[in-house]
Image (cartoon, rainbow, N blue to C red; front, top):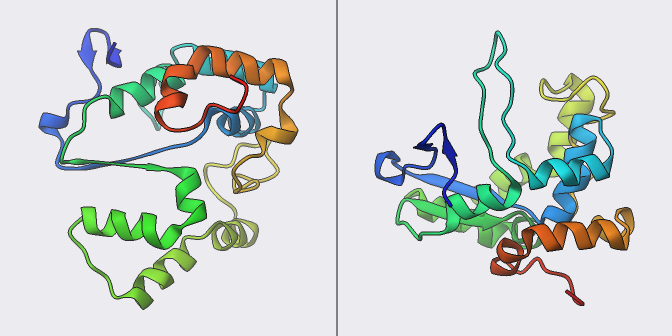
Length: 185
């Protein structure tokens, strides 16, 4: 099923000039999500399985996100020329290839040195250094840092077997599509 908010699709590629969709292994998302919300990993796993709707606030309008699987499926189920999908893990492993692909998708062909410079300026280390020096607006009061670790595969040490099993059981179809199902599942 598509991600819908009160009967209206939230993904309307026919009305979208272009979109870049970055997804991340839900096994790692659970850890970051828990830290960002200041909740336990178990509660983060439960929330990722349910439809999520943020609250209205003076500065923000609510946002309906759905579950992790529904969000991923809604964006990625139909290939579209105006949609470019990337995996967080691939961006970490080969940023030149991934961000070069993003530039090409946007119709830009930067010289290699300029692409390298853009990657350096947007690296985790640079962003974390900026946060340490100047703060970061999206860091929650309970968080030590918004830019926490910036690595893939943290789940191998942070999640127990039961937590991994719950995530895989709930999100296996979308995890399989993007190569996130661990061995043994």
